[in-house]
Length: 590
Image 1 (cartoon, rainbow, N blue to C red):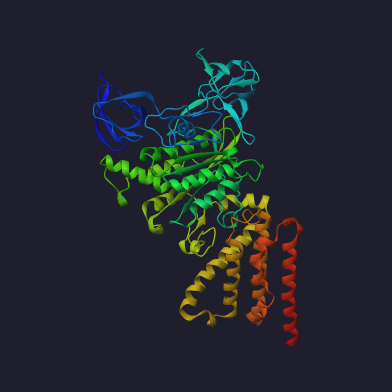
Image 2: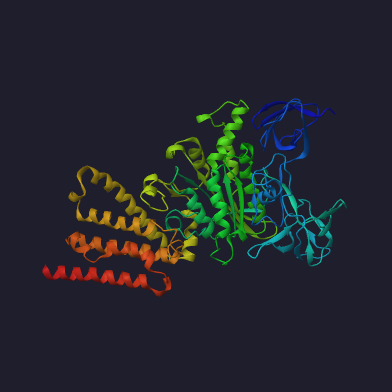
Protein backbone atom coordinates (compact mmCIF):
# COMPACT_ATOMS: atom_id res chain seq x y z
CA UNK A 1 0.00 0.00 0.00
CA UNK A 2 1.30 3.46 -0.91
CA UNK A 3 2.66 5.18 2.21
CA UNK A 4 1.54 8.66 3.13
CA UNK A 5 3.87 11.49 2.21
CA UNK A 6 4.02 15.11 3.33
CA UNK A 7 2.03 17.41 1.05
CA UNK A 8 1.78 20.50 3.27
CA UNK A 9 3.82 22.00 6.11
CA UNK A 10 2.39 24.84 8.21
CA UNK A 11 4.49 25.18 11.35
CA UNK A 12 3.61 22.28 13.67
CA UNK A 13 0.70 21.22 11.40
CA UNK A 14 1.56 18.64 8.74
CA UNK A 15 -0.71 17.23 6.02
CA UNK A 16 0.23 13.81 4.65
CA UNK A 17 -1.51 12.10 1.72
CA UNK A 18 -1.45 8.47 0.61
CA UNK A 19 -3.45 5.26 0.53
CA UNK A 20 -2.09 3.88 3.83
CA UNK A 21 -4.79 3.85 6.52
CA UNK A 22 -4.31 6.05 9.57
CA UNK A 23 -6.62 6.29 12.61
CA UNK A 24 -7.50 9.34 14.68
CA UNK A 25 -4.95 10.08 17.42
CA UNK A 26 -2.44 7.60 16.00
CA UNK A 27 1.13 8.44 16.92
CA UNK A 28 3.28 8.80 13.80
CA UNK A 29 6.90 9.34 12.82
CA UNK A 30 7.20 12.26 10.41
CA UNK A 31 9.85 12.67 7.74
CA UNK A 32 13.43 11.49 7.50
CA UNK A 33 14.21 12.63 11.02
CA UNK A 34 11.25 10.64 12.41
CA UNK A 35 9.75 13.49 14.39
CA UNK A 36 6.91 12.52 16.71
CA UNK A 37 3.38 13.59 15.83
CA UNK A 38 -0.29 12.77 16.34
CA UNK A 39 -3.12 12.47 13.81
CA UNK A 40 -5.79 15.08 14.61
CA UNK A 41 -7.90 15.08 11.43
CA UNK A 42 -8.71 12.64 8.61
CA UNK A 43 -10.15 13.62 5.23
CA UNK A 44 -10.15 10.86 2.64
CA UNK A 45 -6.57 9.91 1.92
CA UNK A 46 -5.25 13.01 3.70
CA UNK A 47 -4.27 13.05 7.35
CA UNK A 48 -3.62 16.22 9.33
CA UNK A 49 -0.95 15.77 11.98
CA UNK A 50 0.29 17.95 14.82
CA UNK A 51 4.03 17.58 15.24
CA UNK A 52 5.53 17.63 18.73
CA UNK A 53 8.89 18.91 17.50
CA UNK A 54 10.35 21.71 15.40
CA UNK A 55 9.52 21.15 11.72
CA UNK A 56 12.09 23.56 10.23
CA UNK A 57 14.07 21.90 7.44
CA UNK A 58 11.39 19.33 6.70
CA UNK A 59 10.61 18.81 2.99
CA UNK A 60 7.52 17.87 1.00
CA UNK A 61 7.40 14.25 -0.08
CA UNK A 62 9.02 12.78 3.02
CA UNK A 63 7.32 9.68 4.43
CA UNK A 64 5.01 9.59 7.43
CA UNK A 65 4.91 6.24 9.23
CA UNK A 66 2.16 5.29 11.68
CA UNK A 67 2.78 3.31 14.85
CA UNK A 68 -0.86 2.11 14.64
CA UNK A 69 -1.34 3.10 18.27
CA UNK A 70 -2.42 6.29 20.03
CA UNK A 71 0.01 8.48 21.95
CA UNK A 72 0.55 6.48 25.14
CA UNK A 73 2.62 6.79 28.28
CA UNK A 74 4.86 4.16 29.85
CA UNK A 75 3.59 3.75 33.40
CA UNK A 76 5.75 1.91 35.90
CA UNK A 77 8.47 2.36 38.55
CA UNK A 78 10.80 5.28 37.93
CA UNK A 79 8.29 8.04 37.21
CA UNK A 80 8.56 9.67 40.66
CA UNK A 81 11.31 12.25 40.81
CA UNK A 82 11.60 12.51 37.03
CA UNK A 83 11.54 15.65 34.90
CA UNK A 84 9.72 15.06 31.59
CA UNK A 85 8.83 17.13 28.59
CA UNK A 86 5.22 17.28 27.34
CA UNK A 87 5.29 13.78 25.80
CA UNK A 88 7.08 11.97 28.66
CA UNK A 89 10.62 12.12 27.36
CA UNK A 90 13.01 12.36 30.35
CA UNK A 91 14.90 15.63 29.98
CA UNK A 92 17.94 14.48 31.96
CA UNK A 93 18.55 11.62 29.50
CA UNK A 94 18.05 13.95 26.53
CA UNK A 95 20.60 16.34 28.04
CA UNK A 96 23.12 13.50 28.34
CA UNK A 97 22.55 12.59 24.68
CA UNK A 98 22.26 15.96 22.98
CA UNK A 99 23.36 18.62 25.46
CA UNK A 100 21.27 21.50 26.84
CA UNK A 101 19.12 21.79 23.70
CA UNK A 102 16.71 19.07 22.56
CA UNK A 103 17.74 17.80 19.13
CA UNK A 104 15.04 16.95 16.64
CA UNK A 105 14.06 13.31 16.40
CA UNK A 106 15.82 12.29 19.61
CA UNK A 107 14.33 9.09 21.00
CA UNK A 108 14.91 7.88 24.54
CA UNK A 109 13.19 5.37 26.79
CA UNK A 110 10.51 6.93 29.00
CA UNK A 111 11.65 4.81 31.94
CA UNK A 112 15.04 3.42 32.95
CA UNK A 113 15.10 -0.08 31.42
CA UNK A 114 18.34 -1.13 33.11
CA UNK A 115 17.61 -0.26 36.74
CA UNK A 116 16.66 -3.18 39.00
CA UNK A 117 13.67 -2.82 41.32
CA UNK A 118 12.99 -4.97 44.36
CA UNK A 119 9.65 -6.68 43.63
CA UNK A 120 7.53 -8.18 46.43
CA UNK A 121 4.58 -10.28 45.15
CA UNK A 122 1.13 -9.69 46.64
CA UNK A 123 -0.70 -12.61 44.99
CA UNK A 124 -0.09 -16.34 44.64
CA UNK A 125 -0.51 -19.01 41.97
CA UNK A 126 -4.14 -19.72 41.11
CA UNK A 127 -5.42 -16.32 42.31
CA UNK A 128 -7.95 -14.61 40.09
CA UNK A 129 -7.10 -11.07 39.02
CA UNK A 130 -9.19 -8.24 37.63
CA UNK A 131 -8.30 -4.86 36.20
CA UNK A 132 -6.04 -2.85 38.54
CA UNK A 133 -5.60 -5.66 41.07
CA UNK A 134 -2.22 -5.30 42.81
CA UNK A 135 0.26 -7.95 41.63
CA UNK A 136 3.06 -6.81 43.90
CA UNK A 137 4.91 -3.79 45.23
CA UNK A 138 8.13 -1.95 44.49
CA UNK A 139 9.78 0.67 46.69
CA UNK A 140 9.97 3.48 44.12
CA UNK A 141 11.33 6.07 46.55
CA UNK A 142 11.59 6.25 50.32
CA UNK A 143 8.27 8.15 50.29
CA UNK A 144 6.31 6.20 47.64
CA UNK A 145 5.65 2.50 47.14
CA UNK A 146 4.68 1.65 43.58
CA UNK A 147 1.93 -0.95 43.38
CA UNK A 148 2.27 -3.00 40.20
CA UNK A 149 -1.24 -3.14 38.74
CA UNK A 150 -2.84 -5.76 36.51
CA UNK A 151 -3.40 -3.80 33.26
CA UNK A 152 -5.81 -6.02 31.36
CA UNK A 153 -9.55 -5.28 31.47
CA UNK A 154 -10.23 -9.01 31.01
CA UNK A 155 -9.94 -10.98 34.27
CA UNK A 156 -7.70 -14.01 34.46
CA UNK A 157 -5.93 -16.60 36.62
CA UNK A 158 -2.31 -16.34 37.70
CA UNK A 159 -0.22 -19.20 36.28
CA UNK A 160 3.15 -17.85 37.35
CA UNK A 161 4.30 -14.96 39.54
CA UNK A 162 7.86 -13.89 40.27
CA UNK A 163 9.30 -14.53 43.70
CA UNK A 164 10.65 -11.65 45.76
CA UNK A 165 13.76 -10.25 44.13
CA UNK A 166 15.28 -7.63 41.85
CA UNK A 167 13.92 -7.19 38.33
CA UNK A 168 14.01 -4.60 35.56
CA UNK A 169 10.78 -3.05 34.28
CA UNK A 170 10.79 -5.29 31.18
CA UNK A 171 11.30 -8.59 33.04
CA UNK A 172 8.24 -10.85 33.13
CA UNK A 173 6.90 -10.85 36.69
CA UNK A 174 3.65 -12.77 36.09
CA UNK A 175 1.81 -14.94 33.58
CA UNK A 176 -1.97 -14.83 33.50
CA UNK A 177 -4.39 -17.13 31.73
CA UNK A 178 -7.45 -15.42 30.24
CA UNK A 179 -10.89 -17.08 29.92
CA UNK A 180 -10.14 -17.92 26.25
CA UNK A 181 -7.04 -19.87 27.41
CA UNK A 182 -4.69 -17.23 26.07
CA UNK A 183 -1.65 -16.68 28.32
CA UNK A 184 -0.26 -13.14 28.64
CA UNK A 185 3.09 -12.08 30.06
CA UNK A 186 3.09 -9.12 32.45
CA UNK A 187 5.97 -6.78 33.25
CA UNK A 188 6.19 -3.87 35.68
CA UNK A 189 5.37 -1.35 32.95
CA UNK A 190 2.06 -0.75 31.16
CA UNK A 191 0.99 1.54 28.32
CA UNK A 192 -1.98 3.89 28.53
CA UNK A 193 -3.35 6.37 25.92
CA UNK A 194 -3.13 9.91 27.31
CA UNK A 195 -6.51 11.07 26.02
CA UNK A 196 -8.53 8.23 27.54
CA UNK A 197 -9.42 8.49 31.27
CA UNK A 198 -8.43 5.46 33.33
CA UNK A 199 -11.55 3.64 34.62
CA UNK A 200 -12.45 3.10 38.27
CA UNK A 201 -15.09 1.16 40.17
CA UNK A 202 -17.07 4.02 41.73
CA UNK A 203 -16.88 7.78 42.02
CA UNK A 204 -17.03 8.97 45.63
CA UNK A 205 -18.32 12.21 47.10
CA UNK A 206 -15.68 14.93 47.43
CA UNK A 207 -16.14 15.38 51.20
CA UNK A 208 -12.58 15.29 52.58
CA UNK A 209 -10.59 18.50 53.01
CA UNK A 210 -7.30 18.87 51.16
CA UNK A 211 -5.35 20.54 53.94
CA UNK A 212 -2.91 23.15 52.67
CA UNK A 213 -1.89 25.07 55.79
CA UNK A 214 -2.91 28.31 54.07
CA UNK A 215 -5.50 30.06 56.26
CA UNK A 216 -7.41 31.83 53.50
CA UNK A 217 -7.83 28.47 51.75
CA UNK A 218 -8.43 25.96 54.57
CA UNK A 219 -10.72 28.22 56.60
CA UNK A 220 -12.37 30.51 54.05
CA UNK A 221 -12.27 28.94 50.54
CA UNK A 222 -11.48 25.23 51.05
CA UNK A 223 -10.91 22.58 48.40
CA UNK A 224 -11.67 18.90 48.87
CA UNK A 225 -9.56 15.94 47.81
CA UNK A 226 -10.64 15.09 44.30
CA UNK A 227 -11.79 18.67 43.77
CA UNK A 228 -11.04 21.27 41.13
CA UNK A 229 -9.79 24.81 41.59
CA UNK A 230 -8.48 27.63 39.47
CA UNK A 231 -6.07 30.43 40.37
CA UNK A 232 -6.58 33.30 37.92
CA UNK A 233 -4.31 36.30 38.20
CA UNK A 234 -2.31 38.75 36.14
CA UNK A 235 1.47 38.94 35.92
CA UNK A 236 3.15 39.25 39.32
CA UNK A 237 0.13 38.34 41.45
CA UNK A 238 1.73 35.19 42.87
CA UNK A 239 0.16 32.26 40.97
CA UNK A 240 3.39 30.28 40.79
CA UNK A 241 4.32 31.08 44.39
CA UNK A 242 0.92 29.90 45.62
CA UNK A 243 1.20 26.68 43.64
CA UNK A 244 4.66 26.10 45.14
CA UNK A 245 3.16 26.49 48.61
CA UNK A 246 0.32 24.09 47.80
CA UNK A 247 2.75 21.57 46.30
CA UNK A 248 4.95 21.67 49.39
CA UNK A 249 2.33 21.72 52.13
CA UNK A 250 -0.91 20.09 50.93
CA UNK A 251 -1.56 16.65 52.37
CA UNK A 252 -1.52 14.86 49.00
CA UNK A 253 0.74 11.82 48.70
CA UNK A 254 2.02 12.72 45.24
CA UNK A 255 2.44 16.03 43.39
CA UNK A 256 2.38 16.37 39.60
CA UNK A 257 3.61 19.83 38.55
CA UNK A 258 2.94 20.76 34.92
CA UNK A 259 4.82 23.79 33.64
CA UNK A 260 2.68 24.31 30.57
CA UNK A 261 3.89 27.11 28.31
CA UNK A 262 5.41 29.18 31.09
CA UNK A 263 8.52 31.27 30.51
CA UNK A 264 11.76 29.34 30.53
CA UNK A 265 13.25 31.29 33.46
CA UNK A 266 10.18 30.56 35.64
CA UNK A 267 10.38 26.84 34.84
CA UNK A 268 14.11 26.92 35.51
CA UNK A 269 13.38 28.31 38.96
CA UNK A 270 10.95 25.44 39.58
CA UNK A 271 13.49 22.87 38.41
CA UNK A 272 16.17 24.40 40.64
CA UNK A 273 13.99 24.93 43.71
CA UNK A 274 12.02 21.69 43.91
CA UNK A 275 15.02 19.34 44.26
CA UNK A 276 16.21 21.50 47.18
CA UNK A 277 12.88 21.45 49.05
CA UNK A 278 12.42 19.19 52.03
CA UNK A 279 9.16 17.33 52.49
CA UNK A 280 7.87 18.63 55.85
CA UNK A 281 6.05 15.35 56.55
CA UNK A 282 8.94 12.94 56.01
CA UNK A 283 12.00 15.16 56.29
CA UNK A 284 13.21 13.78 52.96
CA UNK A 285 13.54 15.57 49.58
CA UNK A 286 10.19 16.68 48.17
CA UNK A 287 11.16 15.23 44.77
CA UNK A 288 10.68 11.75 46.26
CA UNK A 289 6.94 12.26 45.76
CA UNK A 290 6.94 14.77 42.88
CA UNK A 291 6.82 14.51 39.08
CA UNK A 292 7.74 17.59 37.02
CA UNK A 293 6.56 18.11 33.44
CA UNK A 294 8.41 20.98 31.78
CA UNK A 295 7.05 22.35 28.52
CA UNK A 296 8.09 25.97 28.29
CA UNK A 297 6.80 28.62 25.89
CA UNK A 298 9.78 28.22 23.55
CA UNK A 299 9.20 24.47 23.16
CA UNK A 300 6.97 23.07 20.38
CA UNK A 301 3.41 24.32 20.73
CA UNK A 302 1.75 20.95 20.04
CA UNK A 303 3.62 19.27 22.90
CA UNK A 304 2.31 22.02 25.17
CA UNK A 305 -1.24 20.97 24.33
CA UNK A 306 -0.40 17.35 25.14
CA UNK A 307 1.49 18.03 28.39
CA UNK A 308 -1.80 18.55 30.26
CA UNK A 309 -2.98 15.06 29.29
CA UNK A 310 0.41 13.56 30.13
CA UNK A 311 0.16 14.97 33.66
CA UNK A 312 -3.42 13.85 34.29
CA UNK A 313 -2.70 10.31 33.02
CA UNK A 314 0.27 9.93 35.38
CA UNK A 315 -1.91 11.26 38.22
CA UNK A 316 -4.65 8.70 37.48
CA UNK A 317 -2.06 5.90 37.46
CA UNK A 318 -1.05 6.70 41.05
CA UNK A 319 -4.68 7.34 42.03
CA UNK A 320 -5.41 3.74 41.04
CA UNK A 321 -2.88 2.60 43.63
CA UNK A 322 -4.84 4.39 46.35
CA UNK A 323 -2.82 7.60 46.54
CA UNK A 324 -4.08 11.15 46.93
CA UNK A 325 -2.61 13.05 43.97
CA UNK A 326 -2.57 16.81 43.41
CA UNK A 327 -1.94 18.35 39.99
CA UNK A 328 -0.56 21.87 39.67
CA UNK A 329 -1.06 23.09 36.08
CA UNK A 330 0.73 26.37 35.38
CA UNK A 331 -0.90 27.60 33.29
CA UNK A 332 -3.97 26.49 31.38
CA UNK A 333 -3.99 29.85 29.54
CA UNK A 334 -0.82 28.84 27.69
CA UNK A 335 -2.42 25.48 26.93
CA UNK A 336 -5.47 27.27 25.52
CA UNK A 337 -3.17 29.47 23.44
CA UNK A 338 -1.63 26.31 21.97
CA UNK A 339 -5.13 25.14 21.02
CA UNK A 340 -5.76 28.53 19.42
CA UNK A 341 -2.58 28.44 17.37
CA UNK A 342 -3.18 24.92 16.07
CA UNK A 343 -6.85 25.71 15.39
CA UNK A 344 -5.81 28.77 13.40
CA UNK A 345 -3.40 26.74 11.29
CA UNK A 346 -6.20 24.23 10.64
CA UNK A 347 -8.30 27.17 9.38
CA UNK A 348 -11.12 26.37 11.80
CA UNK A 349 -13.81 28.95 12.52
CA UNK A 350 -12.63 30.93 15.57
CA UNK A 351 -14.81 31.80 18.55
CA UNK A 352 -14.32 34.61 21.05
CA UNK A 353 -10.82 36.19 20.95
CA UNK A 354 -9.74 33.64 18.34
CA UNK A 355 -9.97 30.63 20.65
CA UNK A 356 -11.50 27.50 19.07
CA UNK A 357 -15.18 26.86 19.66
CA UNK A 358 -14.31 23.55 21.37
CA UNK A 359 -12.29 25.26 24.15
CA UNK A 360 -15.06 24.70 26.75
CA UNK A 361 -15.32 20.98 25.94
CA UNK A 362 -11.53 20.53 26.19
CA UNK A 363 -11.50 22.28 29.56
CA UNK A 364 -14.41 20.10 30.67
CA UNK A 365 -12.57 16.94 29.61
CA UNK A 366 -9.50 17.95 31.58
CA UNK A 367 -11.16 19.06 34.83
CA UNK A 368 -13.66 16.21 34.56
CA UNK A 369 -10.83 13.73 35.14
CA UNK A 370 -10.45 14.98 38.72
CA UNK A 371 -12.30 13.13 41.47
CA UNK A 372 -12.19 10.88 44.48
CA UNK A 373 -12.66 7.24 43.52
CA UNK A 374 -13.05 3.71 44.79
CA UNK A 375 -10.73 1.55 42.72
CA UNK A 376 -11.16 -2.06 41.58
CA UNK A 377 -8.44 -3.18 44.01
CA UNK A 378 -10.41 -1.84 47.00
CA UNK A 379 -8.27 1.26 47.56
CA UNK A 380 -9.53 4.84 47.61
CA UNK A 381 -7.64 7.46 45.65
CA UNK A 382 -8.14 10.96 44.38
CA UNK A 383 -6.91 13.41 41.76
CA UNK A 384 -7.17 17.09 42.71
CA UNK A 385 -6.61 19.60 39.92
CA UNK A 386 -5.44 23.15 40.65
CA UNK A 387 -4.99 25.09 37.43
CA UNK A 388 -3.54 28.57 37.14
CA UNK A 389 -4.97 30.97 34.56
CA UNK A 390 -3.05 33.98 33.25
CA UNK A 391 -5.58 36.47 31.85
CA UNK A 392 -4.01 39.40 30.04
CA UNK A 393 -4.21 42.55 32.12
CA UNK A 394 -5.95 40.65 34.95
CA UNK A 395 -9.13 40.64 32.84
CA UNK A 396 -11.23 37.87 34.37
CA UNK A 397 -13.89 38.29 31.66
CA UNK A 398 -11.65 36.76 28.97
CA UNK A 399 -12.69 33.33 27.54
CA UNK A 400 -10.23 31.01 29.33
CA UNK A 401 -11.08 32.35 32.80
CA UNK A 402 -14.81 32.42 32.14
CA UNK A 403 -14.94 28.93 30.66
CA UNK A 404 -12.73 27.54 33.41
CA UNK A 405 -15.17 28.90 36.03
CA UNK A 406 -17.87 26.75 34.50
CA UNK A 407 -16.03 23.52 35.28
CA UNK A 408 -14.30 24.15 38.61
CA UNK A 409 -15.80 24.41 42.09
CA UNK A 410 -13.20 26.65 43.73
CA UNK A 411 -12.18 30.09 42.46
CA UNK A 412 -9.16 31.76 44.07
CA UNK A 413 -9.05 35.10 42.28
CA UNK A 414 -5.72 36.88 42.73
CA UNK A 415 -5.82 40.65 43.05
CA UNK A 416 -3.06 42.85 41.64
CA UNK A 417 -3.56 45.58 44.25
CA UNK A 418 -3.26 43.06 47.09
CA UNK A 419 -0.13 41.57 45.55
CA UNK A 420 1.52 44.96 45.06
CA UNK A 421 0.73 45.86 48.69
CA UNK A 422 2.60 42.67 49.75
CA UNK A 423 -0.55 40.88 50.85
CA UNK A 424 0.16 37.18 50.31
CA UNK A 425 -1.66 35.09 49.22
CA UNK A 426 -3.28 37.83 47.10
CA UNK A 427 -6.65 36.01 47.05
CA UNK A 428 -9.43 38.59 46.78
CA UNK A 429 -12.06 37.49 49.31
CA UNK A 430 -14.79 39.46 47.54
CA UNK A 431 -14.61 37.56 44.23
CA UNK A 432 -13.34 34.17 45.40
CA UNK A 433 -15.59 31.28 46.42
CA UNK A 434 -15.71 27.57 47.23
CA UNK A 435 -18.63 25.30 46.38
CA UNK A 436 -17.30 22.49 48.60
CA UNK A 437 -18.39 23.99 51.92
CA UNK A 438 -21.63 22.00 52.12
CA UNK A 439 -19.75 18.78 51.24
CA UNK A 440 -17.16 19.45 53.92
CA UNK A 441 -19.47 20.37 56.81
CA UNK A 442 -19.40 16.85 58.27
CA UNK A 443 -15.61 16.62 57.84
CA UNK A 444 -15.09 19.90 59.73
CA UNK A 445 -17.39 18.73 62.54
CA UNK A 446 -15.44 15.48 62.96
CA UNK A 447 -11.92 16.81 62.53
CA UNK A 448 -12.07 20.32 64.00
CA UNK A 449 -14.07 22.16 66.60
CA UNK A 450 -17.84 21.97 66.03
CA UNK A 451 -18.20 25.71 65.56
CA UNK A 452 -15.28 26.06 63.09
CA UNK A 453 -17.57 26.90 60.17
CA UNK A 454 -19.68 29.21 62.35
CA UNK A 455 -16.65 31.39 63.00
CA UNK A 456 -15.70 31.14 59.33
CA UNK A 457 -19.12 32.41 58.28
CA UNK A 458 -18.95 35.29 60.78
CA UNK A 459 -15.59 36.38 59.36
CA UNK A 460 -16.93 36.30 55.80
CA UNK A 461 -19.95 38.35 56.89
CA UNK A 462 -17.70 40.95 58.54
CA UNK A 463 -15.54 41.22 55.41
CA UNK A 464 -18.63 41.78 53.27
CA UNK A 465 -19.83 44.49 55.66
CA UNK A 466 -16.40 46.12 55.56
CA UNK A 467 -16.51 46.21 51.76
CA UNK A 468 -19.79 48.13 51.86
CA UNK A 469 -18.48 50.49 54.55
CA UNK A 470 -15.32 51.22 52.56
CA UNK A 471 -17.48 52.44 49.68
CA UNK A 472 -19.40 54.73 52.03
CA UNK A 473 -16.23 55.96 53.73
CA UNK A 474 -14.77 56.97 50.35
CA UNK A 475 -17.71 59.34 49.87
CA UNK A 476 -18.42 60.77 53.34
CA UNK A 477 -15.18 60.03 55.18
CA UNK A 478 -14.50 57.51 57.95
CA UNK A 479 -14.86 60.05 60.77
CA UNK A 480 -18.62 60.42 60.33
CA UNK A 481 -19.24 56.69 60.71
CA UNK A 482 -20.77 55.43 63.92
CA UNK A 483 -18.58 53.65 66.47
CA UNK A 484 -20.14 50.27 65.58
CA UNK A 485 -19.13 50.82 61.94
CA UNK A 486 -15.65 51.95 62.97
CA UNK A 487 -15.33 48.75 65.00
CA UNK A 488 -16.09 46.67 61.89
CA UNK A 489 -13.36 48.50 59.96
CA UNK A 490 -10.84 47.97 62.77
CA UNK A 491 -11.67 44.30 63.29
CA UNK A 492 -11.56 43.59 59.53
CA UNK A 493 -8.15 45.23 59.34
CA UNK A 494 -7.08 42.69 61.97
CA UNK A 495 -8.61 39.88 59.93
CA UNK A 496 -6.89 41.01 56.74
CA UNK A 497 -3.45 41.60 58.23
CA UNK A 498 -3.49 38.95 60.94
CA UNK A 499 -5.46 36.10 59.40
CA UNK A 500 -5.79 36.33 55.61
CA UNK A 501 -2.23 37.56 55.05
CA UNK A 502 0.41 34.85 55.42
CA UNK A 503 4.19 34.84 55.15
CA UNK A 504 5.45 31.98 52.97
CA UNK A 505 9.06 32.77 53.90
CA UNK A 506 8.46 32.42 57.65
CA UNK A 507 9.22 29.07 59.26
CA UNK A 508 6.30 29.62 61.65
CA UNK A 509 3.70 31.14 59.35
CA UNK A 510 4.33 29.24 56.11
CA UNK A 511 2.09 26.37 57.30
CA UNK A 512 -0.68 26.79 59.87
CA UNK A 513 -2.52 23.77 61.35
CA UNK A 514 -6.32 23.85 61.52
CA UNK A 515 -6.34 24.16 65.32
CA UNK A 516 -4.37 27.41 65.18
CA UNK A 517 -6.61 28.67 62.37
CA UNK A 518 -9.67 27.96 64.53
CA UNK A 519 -8.24 29.68 67.61
CA UNK A 520 -7.23 32.73 65.59
CA UNK A 521 -10.75 33.02 64.12
CA UNK A 522 -12.38 32.49 67.51
CA UNK A 523 -10.20 35.15 69.16
CA UNK A 524 -10.94 37.91 66.65
CA UNK A 525 -14.68 37.15 66.40
CA UNK A 526 -15.17 36.86 70.17
CA UNK A 527 -13.39 40.18 70.76
CA UNK A 528 -15.56 41.80 68.09
CA UNK A 529 -18.79 40.51 69.61
CA UNK A 530 -17.92 41.62 73.15
CA UNK A 531 -16.67 45.00 71.89
CA UNK A 532 -19.82 45.50 69.83
CA UNK A 533 -21.96 44.85 72.91
CA UNK A 534 -20.01 47.53 74.80
CA UNK A 535 -20.46 50.04 71.97
CA UNK A 536 -24.20 49.34 72.00
CA UNK A 537 -24.12 50.22 75.72
CA UNK A 538 -22.67 53.62 74.84
CA UNK A 539 -18.97 53.02 75.48
CA UNK A 540 -16.89 54.94 72.89
CA UNK A 541 -14.68 53.18 70.36
CA UNK A 542 -11.65 55.12 71.55
CA UNK A 543 -11.95 53.47 74.98
CA UNK A 544 -12.12 49.98 73.49
CA UNK A 545 -9.01 50.58 71.39
CA UNK A 546 -7.04 51.17 74.59
CA UNK A 547 -6.89 47.42 75.36
CA UNK A 548 -4.28 47.07 72.57
CA UNK A 549 -5.92 44.18 70.78
CA UNK A 550 -6.05 45.77 67.32
CA UNK A 551 -2.31 46.39 67.25
CA UNK A 552 -1.29 43.04 68.75
CA UNK A 553 -3.53 40.58 66.89
CA UNK A 554 -1.44 40.39 63.66
CA UNK A 555 1.59 39.36 65.74
CA UNK A 556 -0.08 36.15 66.89
CA UNK A 557 0.69 34.31 63.64
CA UNK A 558 4.43 34.70 64.27
CA UNK A 559 4.58 34.67 68.07
CA UNK A 560 2.45 31.60 68.87
CA UNK A 561 4.31 28.45 67.81
CA UNK A 562 2.99 25.77 70.16
CA UNK A 563 -0.78 25.66 69.69
CA UNK A 564 -1.28 23.08 72.41
CA UNK A 565 0.15 25.47 75.01
CA UNK A 566 -3.14 27.37 75.14
CA UNK A 567 -1.42 30.74 74.70
CA UNK A 568 -4.11 32.04 72.33
CA UNK A 569 -6.81 31.04 74.82
CA UNK A 570 -4.93 32.90 77.55
CA UNK A 571 -4.68 35.97 75.32
CA UNK A 572 -8.42 35.86 74.67
CA UNK A 573 -9.17 35.59 78.40
CA UNK A 574 -6.87 38.54 79.03
CA UNK A 575 -8.52 40.80 76.43
CA UNK A 576 -12.03 39.75 77.47
CA UNK A 577 -11.14 40.63 81.08
CA UNK A 578 -9.97 44.09 79.99
CA UNK A 579 -13.25 44.63 78.13
CA UNK A 580 -15.23 43.44 81.17
CA UNK A 581 -13.29 45.90 83.34
CA UNK A 582 -14.28 48.69 80.95
CA UNK A 583 -17.90 47.60 81.25
CA UNK A 584 -17.67 47.61 85.05
CA UNK A 585 -16.19 51.12 85.00
CA UNK A 586 -18.98 52.29 82.74
CA UNK A 587 -21.64 50.84 85.03
CA UNK A 588 -20.06 52.59 88.03
CA UNK A 589 -20.18 55.93 86.21
CA UNK A 590 -23.84 55.40 85.37
